[in-house]
Length: 423
Image 1: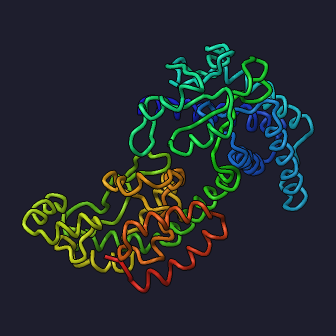
Image 2: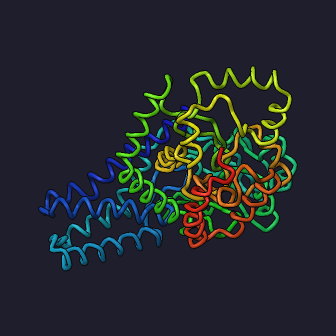
Image 3: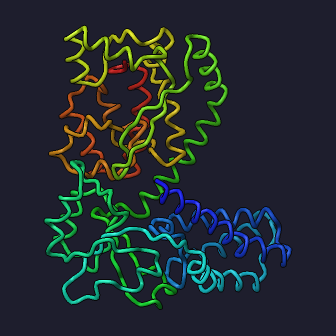
Protein backbone atom coordinates (compact mmCIF):
# COMPACT_ATOMS: atom_id res chain seq x y z
CA UNK A 1 0.00 0.00 0.00
CA UNK A 2 2.88 2.38 0.85
CA UNK A 3 4.49 1.71 -2.54
CA UNK A 4 1.18 2.40 -4.28
CA UNK A 5 0.75 5.71 -2.42
CA UNK A 6 4.34 6.70 -3.21
CA UNK A 7 3.81 5.91 -6.89
CA UNK A 8 0.60 7.98 -6.88
CA UNK A 9 2.32 10.96 -5.23
CA UNK A 10 5.16 10.68 -7.73
CA UNK A 11 2.72 10.68 -10.67
CA UNK A 12 0.75 13.65 -9.28
CA UNK A 13 3.87 15.72 -8.67
CA UNK A 14 5.12 14.83 -12.14
CA UNK A 15 1.84 15.94 -13.74
CA UNK A 16 2.04 19.22 -11.80
CA UNK A 17 5.55 19.93 -13.11
CA UNK A 18 4.43 18.82 -16.57
CA UNK A 19 1.46 21.21 -16.59
CA UNK A 20 3.55 24.17 -15.45
CA UNK A 21 6.38 23.66 -17.93
CA UNK A 22 4.30 22.56 -20.92
CA UNK A 23 1.30 24.86 -20.67
CA UNK A 24 1.25 27.62 -18.12
CA UNK A 25 4.85 28.86 -18.34
CA UNK A 26 4.75 29.26 -22.17
CA UNK A 27 1.19 30.60 -21.81
CA UNK A 28 2.36 33.35 -19.45
CA UNK A 29 5.30 34.22 -21.71
CA UNK A 30 3.16 34.44 -24.86
CA UNK A 31 0.13 35.96 -23.06
CA UNK A 32 -2.26 33.21 -24.06
CA UNK A 33 -5.77 33.64 -22.51
CA UNK A 34 -5.92 31.73 -19.22
CA UNK A 35 -9.27 30.07 -20.01
CA UNK A 36 -7.77 28.70 -23.23
CA UNK A 37 -4.78 27.33 -21.31
CA UNK A 38 -7.07 25.57 -18.83
CA UNK A 39 -9.17 24.02 -21.62
CA UNK A 40 -6.08 22.86 -23.54
CA UNK A 41 -4.46 21.41 -20.41
CA UNK A 42 -7.50 19.35 -19.39
CA UNK A 43 -7.92 18.31 -23.02
CA UNK A 44 -4.29 17.21 -22.97
CA UNK A 45 -4.95 15.02 -19.91
CA UNK A 46 -8.18 13.70 -21.48
CA UNK A 47 -6.53 12.72 -24.77
CA UNK A 48 -3.57 11.23 -22.87
CA UNK A 49 -5.93 9.06 -20.83
CA UNK A 50 -7.86 7.88 -23.90
CA UNK A 51 -4.63 6.84 -25.61
CA UNK A 52 -3.46 4.89 -22.56
CA UNK A 53 -0.58 7.12 -21.44
CA UNK A 54 -1.44 6.58 -17.74
CA UNK A 55 -2.04 2.82 -17.93
CA UNK A 56 1.52 1.71 -17.24
CA UNK A 57 3.16 0.97 -13.89
CA UNK A 58 5.48 3.82 -14.90
CA UNK A 59 4.81 7.54 -14.39
CA UNK A 60 2.99 9.33 -17.26
CA UNK A 61 5.21 8.94 -20.32
CA UNK A 62 5.16 10.58 -23.74
CA UNK A 63 8.21 10.73 -26.06
CA UNK A 64 8.30 10.55 -29.86
CA UNK A 65 5.81 7.70 -30.20
CA UNK A 66 2.75 8.01 -32.51
CA UNK A 67 0.35 8.47 -29.55
CA UNK A 68 2.15 11.66 -28.49
CA UNK A 69 2.04 13.07 -32.02
CA UNK A 70 -1.70 12.37 -32.31
CA UNK A 71 -2.34 14.06 -28.94
CA UNK A 72 -0.32 17.06 -30.10
CA UNK A 73 -2.28 17.34 -33.37
CA UNK A 74 -5.60 17.02 -31.53
CA UNK A 75 -4.60 19.92 -29.26
CA UNK A 76 -3.75 22.08 -32.29
CA UNK A 77 -7.11 21.25 -33.89
CA UNK A 78 -8.97 22.03 -30.65
CA UNK A 79 -7.08 25.30 -30.22
CA UNK A 80 -7.95 26.36 -33.77
CA UNK A 81 -11.63 25.50 -33.20
CA UNK A 82 -11.77 27.44 -29.91
CA UNK A 83 -9.94 30.41 -31.40
CA UNK A 84 -12.17 30.68 -34.45
CA UNK A 85 -15.48 29.44 -33.04
CA UNK A 86 -15.52 30.82 -29.49
CA UNK A 87 -13.12 33.75 -29.85
CA UNK A 88 -10.82 32.55 -27.04
CA UNK A 89 -7.68 33.76 -28.76
CA UNK A 90 -4.90 31.84 -30.48
CA UNK A 91 -1.68 30.03 -29.58
CA UNK A 92 1.47 31.37 -31.31
CA UNK A 93 3.51 28.98 -33.43
CA UNK A 94 6.54 29.35 -31.13
CA UNK A 95 4.43 28.18 -28.18
CA UNK A 96 3.37 25.07 -30.12
CA UNK A 97 7.02 24.40 -30.95
CA UNK A 98 7.98 24.63 -27.26
CA UNK A 99 5.15 22.25 -26.37
CA UNK A 100 6.23 19.76 -29.03
CA UNK A 101 9.86 19.86 -27.88
CA UNK A 102 8.73 19.46 -24.27
CA UNK A 103 6.58 16.42 -24.99
CA UNK A 104 9.18 14.69 -27.13
CA UNK A 105 12.46 15.64 -25.50
CA UNK A 106 12.09 17.38 -22.13
CA UNK A 107 9.43 15.08 -20.68
CA UNK A 108 11.44 11.84 -21.06
CA UNK A 109 14.48 13.56 -19.50
CA UNK A 110 12.37 14.78 -16.57
CA UNK A 111 10.96 11.30 -16.25
CA UNK A 112 14.45 9.89 -15.76
CA UNK A 113 15.54 12.63 -13.34
CA UNK A 114 12.43 12.57 -11.15
CA UNK A 115 11.91 8.82 -11.01
CA UNK A 116 11.87 7.60 -7.40
CA UNK A 117 14.68 5.41 -6.12
CA UNK A 118 12.37 2.68 -4.83
CA UNK A 119 11.96 0.02 -7.50
CA UNK A 120 8.69 -1.68 -8.43
CA UNK A 121 8.91 -5.47 -7.88
CA UNK A 122 8.17 -7.47 -11.02
CA UNK A 123 8.31 -11.03 -12.29
CA UNK A 124 10.41 -11.24 -15.48
CA UNK A 125 9.56 -14.01 -17.93
CA UNK A 126 12.42 -14.50 -20.39
CA UNK A 127 13.31 -16.81 -23.22
CA UNK A 128 16.45 -18.97 -23.04
CA UNK A 129 18.60 -16.76 -25.27
CA UNK A 130 17.82 -13.41 -23.65
CA UNK A 131 19.77 -11.34 -21.16
CA UNK A 132 18.08 -12.13 -17.80
CA UNK A 133 18.48 -8.55 -16.53
CA UNK A 134 17.83 -5.98 -19.31
CA UNK A 135 19.21 -2.59 -18.22
CA UNK A 136 16.16 -0.80 -19.55
CA UNK A 137 14.19 -2.17 -16.59
CA UNK A 138 16.36 -0.16 -14.21
CA UNK A 139 15.63 3.04 -16.16
CA UNK A 140 11.92 2.19 -15.89
CA UNK A 141 12.39 1.74 -12.09
CA UNK A 142 11.41 -1.94 -12.34
CA UNK A 143 13.21 -4.57 -10.28
CA UNK A 144 13.03 -8.24 -11.31
CA UNK A 145 12.51 -9.95 -7.96
CA UNK A 146 12.40 -13.29 -9.75
CA UNK A 147 13.31 -14.35 -13.28
CA UNK A 148 11.78 -17.43 -14.89
CA UNK A 149 11.60 -18.86 -18.39
CA UNK A 150 8.48 -19.13 -20.49
CA UNK A 151 8.48 -22.90 -19.95
CA UNK A 152 8.47 -22.45 -16.15
CA UNK A 153 5.67 -19.88 -16.22
CA UNK A 154 2.79 -22.35 -16.48
CA UNK A 155 3.79 -24.26 -13.35
CA UNK A 156 5.03 -21.26 -11.36
CA UNK A 157 2.05 -18.89 -11.57
CA UNK A 158 -0.39 -21.20 -9.73
CA UNK A 159 2.03 -21.33 -6.77
CA UNK A 160 1.96 -17.54 -6.25
CA UNK A 161 -1.71 -16.86 -7.08
CA UNK A 162 -4.70 -17.16 -4.77
CA UNK A 163 -7.92 -18.94 -5.66
CA UNK A 164 -9.22 -15.90 -7.56
CA UNK A 165 -6.04 -15.67 -9.63
CA UNK A 166 -4.61 -12.60 -7.85
CA UNK A 167 -0.81 -12.27 -7.83
CA UNK A 168 0.08 -9.99 -4.92
CA UNK A 169 3.82 -10.65 -4.70
CA UNK A 170 4.61 -8.75 -7.92
CA UNK A 171 3.21 -5.43 -9.15
CA UNK A 172 3.55 -6.54 -12.76
CA UNK A 173 4.67 -9.43 -14.97
CA UNK A 174 7.09 -8.47 -17.75
CA UNK A 175 7.14 -10.78 -20.77
CA UNK A 176 9.80 -10.88 -23.46
CA UNK A 177 7.47 -12.56 -25.90
CA UNK A 178 3.73 -13.16 -26.14
CA UNK A 179 2.02 -15.96 -28.04
CA UNK A 180 -1.36 -17.66 -28.01
CA UNK A 181 -0.34 -20.04 -25.23
CA UNK A 182 0.63 -17.16 -22.92
CA UNK A 183 -2.55 -15.23 -23.74
CA UNK A 184 -4.66 -18.27 -22.83
CA UNK A 185 -2.73 -18.56 -19.57
CA UNK A 186 -3.28 -14.86 -18.80
CA UNK A 187 -7.05 -15.37 -18.72
CA UNK A 188 -6.73 -17.22 -15.42
CA UNK A 189 -4.92 -14.43 -13.56
CA UNK A 190 -5.78 -10.95 -12.31
CA UNK A 191 -2.41 -9.30 -12.88
CA UNK A 192 -0.84 -6.61 -15.07
CA UNK A 193 1.07 -8.16 -17.97
CA UNK A 194 3.50 -6.11 -20.07
CA UNK A 195 5.51 -6.93 -23.17
CA UNK A 196 9.10 -5.70 -23.12
CA UNK A 197 9.29 -4.21 -26.61
CA UNK A 198 12.93 -3.12 -26.47
CA UNK A 199 15.96 -3.41 -24.19
CA UNK A 200 17.65 -0.23 -25.48
CA UNK A 201 17.67 3.15 -23.76
CA UNK A 202 16.89 4.86 -27.07
CA UNK A 203 13.43 3.28 -27.04
CA UNK A 204 12.78 5.03 -23.72
CA UNK A 205 12.90 8.39 -25.52
CA UNK A 206 11.08 7.07 -28.58
CA UNK A 207 8.19 5.88 -26.43
CA UNK A 208 7.62 3.60 -23.45
CA UNK A 209 9.49 0.30 -24.03
CA UNK A 210 6.69 -1.60 -22.28
CA UNK A 211 3.34 -2.41 -23.88
CA UNK A 212 0.35 -3.51 -21.82
CA UNK A 213 -0.86 -6.92 -22.94
CA UNK A 214 -4.56 -7.68 -22.66
CA UNK A 215 -6.23 -11.03 -23.29
CA UNK A 216 -9.44 -9.41 -24.56
CA UNK A 217 -9.52 -6.88 -27.43
CA UNK A 218 -11.88 -4.30 -25.89
CA UNK A 219 -9.57 -3.40 -22.99
CA UNK A 220 -8.41 -0.41 -25.02
CA UNK A 221 -9.86 2.95 -26.03
CA UNK A 222 -13.52 1.91 -25.61
CA UNK A 223 -12.94 0.78 -22.03
CA UNK A 224 -11.18 4.05 -21.21
CA UNK A 225 -14.05 5.93 -22.89
CA UNK A 226 -16.44 4.00 -20.64
CA UNK A 227 -14.51 5.27 -17.62
CA UNK A 228 -14.72 8.89 -18.85
CA UNK A 229 -18.50 8.54 -19.37
CA UNK A 230 -18.84 7.01 -15.90
CA UNK A 231 -17.01 9.92 -14.31
CA UNK A 232 -18.94 12.66 -16.12
CA UNK A 233 -22.36 11.05 -15.66
CA UNK A 234 -21.75 10.34 -11.96
CA UNK A 235 -20.59 13.90 -11.41
CA UNK A 236 -23.73 15.25 -13.14
CA UNK A 237 -26.07 12.92 -11.20
CA UNK A 238 -24.48 13.80 -7.85
CA UNK A 239 -24.73 17.51 -8.67
CA UNK A 240 -28.39 17.25 -9.70
CA UNK A 241 -29.34 15.08 -6.71
CA UNK A 242 -27.30 17.04 -4.14
CA UNK A 243 -30.39 18.57 -2.39
CA UNK A 244 -32.10 15.16 -2.30
CA UNK A 245 -28.95 13.46 -0.94
CA UNK A 246 -28.67 16.09 1.80
CA UNK A 247 -32.33 15.48 2.68
CA UNK A 248 -31.72 11.71 2.96
CA UNK A 249 -28.67 12.36 5.16
CA UNK A 250 -30.80 14.50 7.48
CA UNK A 251 -33.52 11.82 7.62
CA UNK A 252 -30.98 9.10 8.51
CA UNK A 253 -29.58 11.19 11.36
CA UNK A 254 -33.09 11.83 12.71
CA UNK A 255 -34.28 8.23 12.25
CA UNK A 256 -31.69 6.40 14.37
CA UNK A 257 -28.28 6.97 15.98
CA UNK A 258 -25.19 5.95 14.05
CA UNK A 259 -23.11 6.90 11.00
CA UNK A 260 -24.69 8.16 7.79
CA UNK A 261 -22.86 5.80 5.48
CA UNK A 262 -22.20 2.09 5.64
CA UNK A 263 -18.84 0.91 4.27
CA UNK A 264 -18.57 -2.70 3.15
CA UNK A 265 -15.45 -4.40 1.78
CA UNK A 266 -15.93 -5.73 -1.75
CA UNK A 267 -13.77 -7.12 -4.56
CA UNK A 268 -13.11 -4.69 -7.39
CA UNK A 269 -11.28 -4.68 -10.71
CA UNK A 270 -8.20 -6.94 -10.88
CA UNK A 271 -9.39 -8.49 -7.61
CA UNK A 272 -8.38 -5.43 -5.58
CA UNK A 273 -10.46 -4.70 -2.49
CA UNK A 274 -12.35 -1.47 -1.94
CA UNK A 275 -15.03 -0.19 0.43
CA UNK A 276 -18.46 0.11 -1.19
CA UNK A 277 -20.56 3.00 0.13
CA UNK A 278 -24.24 2.86 0.99
CA UNK A 279 -26.62 4.91 3.08
CA UNK A 280 -26.96 3.17 6.44
CA UNK A 281 -30.26 1.27 6.55
CA UNK A 282 -29.67 -0.77 9.72
CA UNK A 283 -29.24 -0.14 13.41
CA UNK A 284 -25.84 1.00 14.66
CA UNK A 285 -24.52 -2.38 15.87
CA UNK A 286 -25.97 -4.40 12.98
CA UNK A 287 -22.89 -6.60 12.44
CA UNK A 288 -22.83 -7.69 16.11
CA UNK A 289 -26.54 -8.40 16.10
CA UNK A 290 -26.26 -10.54 12.96
CA UNK A 291 -24.11 -13.14 14.71
CA UNK A 292 -26.67 -13.49 17.51
CA UNK A 293 -29.60 -13.68 15.07
CA UNK A 294 -27.99 -16.40 12.93
CA UNK A 295 -26.92 -18.38 15.98
CA UNK A 296 -30.47 -18.49 17.35
CA UNK A 297 -32.34 -19.13 14.09
CA UNK A 298 -31.24 -22.00 11.76
CA UNK A 299 -33.64 -20.94 8.97
CA UNK A 300 -32.25 -17.41 8.85
CA UNK A 301 -28.73 -18.84 8.99
CA UNK A 302 -29.50 -21.02 5.95
CA UNK A 303 -31.06 -18.07 4.09
CA UNK A 304 -28.04 -15.84 4.78
CA UNK A 305 -25.62 -18.56 3.68
CA UNK A 306 -27.57 -18.87 0.42
CA UNK A 307 -28.01 -15.17 -0.50
CA UNK A 308 -25.87 -13.19 2.00
CA UNK A 309 -29.08 -11.27 2.80
CA UNK A 310 -32.18 -11.68 4.95
CA UNK A 311 -35.53 -10.91 3.35
CA UNK A 312 -37.09 -9.80 6.64
CA UNK A 313 -34.01 -8.54 8.41
CA UNK A 314 -34.87 -7.37 11.96
CA UNK A 315 -31.86 -5.05 11.93
CA UNK A 316 -33.28 -2.81 9.17
CA UNK A 317 -34.69 0.51 10.37
CA UNK A 318 -38.08 1.94 9.33
CA UNK A 319 -36.42 4.46 7.02
CA UNK A 320 -34.01 1.77 5.86
CA UNK A 321 -36.86 -0.38 4.50
CA UNK A 322 -38.04 2.52 2.35
CA UNK A 323 -34.51 3.34 1.12
CA UNK A 324 -33.90 -0.31 0.21
CA UNK A 325 -37.24 -0.75 -1.57
CA UNK A 326 -36.30 1.92 -4.14
CA UNK A 327 -32.53 1.28 -4.01
CA UNK A 328 -31.96 4.81 -2.73
CA UNK A 329 -29.45 3.39 -0.25
CA UNK A 330 -27.14 2.59 -3.20
CA UNK A 331 -26.81 6.19 -4.46
CA UNK A 332 -23.54 6.80 -2.51
CA UNK A 333 -21.94 4.26 -4.82
CA UNK A 334 -21.72 7.11 -7.31
CA UNK A 335 -18.82 8.37 -5.18
CA UNK A 336 -17.15 4.96 -5.67
CA UNK A 337 -17.54 5.55 -9.41
CA UNK A 338 -15.89 8.98 -9.13
CA UNK A 339 -12.98 7.44 -7.20
CA UNK A 340 -12.42 4.90 -9.97
CA UNK A 341 -13.47 1.89 -7.90
CA UNK A 342 -16.74 1.13 -9.69
CA UNK A 343 -18.57 1.72 -12.95
CA UNK A 344 -22.16 2.76 -13.53
CA UNK A 345 -22.72 -0.59 -15.28
CA UNK A 346 -20.76 -3.75 -14.64
CA UNK A 347 -20.62 -7.12 -12.85
CA UNK A 348 -21.73 -7.51 -9.22
CA UNK A 349 -19.33 -6.24 -6.53
CA UNK A 350 -18.97 -9.42 -4.48
CA UNK A 351 -17.48 -10.10 -1.05
CA UNK A 352 -14.56 -12.47 -0.37
CA UNK A 353 -16.88 -15.26 0.85
CA UNK A 354 -18.59 -15.34 -2.56
CA UNK A 355 -15.39 -16.23 -4.45
CA UNK A 356 -16.23 -19.92 -4.15
CA UNK A 357 -19.12 -19.42 -6.60
CA UNK A 358 -16.75 -17.98 -9.23
CA UNK A 359 -13.85 -20.44 -8.92
CA UNK A 360 -15.02 -22.59 -11.85
CA UNK A 361 -15.97 -19.56 -13.97
CA UNK A 362 -13.77 -17.28 -16.06
CA UNK A 363 -11.84 -14.41 -14.47
CA UNK A 364 -13.23 -11.94 -17.00
CA UNK A 365 -15.85 -10.35 -14.66
CA UNK A 366 -13.03 -9.38 -12.28
CA UNK A 367 -11.21 -7.54 -15.05
CA UNK A 368 -14.10 -5.07 -15.23
CA UNK A 369 -15.02 -2.41 -12.71
CA UNK A 370 -18.00 -3.70 -10.66
CA UNK A 371 -21.20 -1.85 -11.47
CA UNK A 372 -23.75 0.19 -9.54
CA UNK A 373 -26.20 -1.58 -11.84
CA UNK A 374 -25.86 -4.46 -14.28
CA UNK A 375 -27.54 -7.48 -15.82
CA UNK A 376 -28.07 -8.95 -12.35
CA UNK A 377 -29.87 -5.84 -11.11
CA UNK A 378 -32.30 -5.83 -14.06
CA UNK A 379 -32.84 -9.61 -14.00
CA UNK A 380 -34.32 -10.20 -10.56
CA UNK A 381 -31.49 -9.21 -8.18
CA UNK A 382 -31.69 -11.26 -4.96
CA UNK A 383 -34.42 -13.52 -6.40
CA UNK A 384 -31.83 -15.10 -8.71
CA UNK A 385 -29.60 -18.05 -7.77
CA UNK A 386 -25.81 -17.75 -7.56
CA UNK A 387 -25.42 -19.84 -10.70
CA UNK A 388 -27.62 -17.32 -12.53
CA UNK A 389 -25.67 -14.38 -11.09
CA UNK A 390 -22.34 -15.78 -12.25
CA UNK A 391 -23.80 -16.57 -15.69
CA UNK A 392 -25.22 -13.03 -16.00
CA UNK A 393 -21.87 -11.48 -15.06
CA UNK A 394 -20.06 -13.60 -17.64
CA UNK A 395 -22.68 -12.83 -20.30
CA UNK A 396 -22.31 -9.10 -19.71
CA UNK A 397 -18.51 -9.18 -19.89
CA UNK A 398 -18.26 -11.40 -22.98
CA UNK A 399 -20.78 -9.26 -24.89
CA UNK A 400 -19.92 -5.84 -23.50
CA UNK A 401 -20.25 -2.67 -25.59
CA UNK A 402 -21.30 0.91 -24.83
CA UNK A 403 -24.78 0.47 -26.32
CA UNK A 404 -25.35 -2.46 -23.96
CA UNK A 405 -24.55 -0.19 -20.99
CA UNK A 406 -27.12 2.36 -22.17
CA UNK A 407 -29.80 -0.36 -22.47
CA UNK A 408 -29.07 -1.65 -18.94
CA UNK A 409 -29.26 1.88 -17.49
CA UNK A 410 -32.65 2.40 -19.15
CA UNK A 411 -33.89 -0.98 -17.84
CA UNK A 412 -32.68 -0.14 -14.33
CA UNK A 413 -35.39 2.51 -13.82
CA UNK A 414 -38.40 0.13 -14.23
CA UNK A 415 -36.49 -2.61 -12.35
CA UNK A 416 -36.04 -0.28 -9.36
CA UNK A 417 -39.67 0.88 -9.46
CA UNK A 418 -40.91 -2.74 -9.58
CA UNK A 419 -38.97 -3.41 -6.35
CA UNK A 420 -38.36 -7.02 -7.44
CA UNK A 421 -35.63 -8.62 -5.36
CA UNK A 422 -34.99 -5.40 -3.44
CA UNK A 423 -34.56 -6.07 0.26
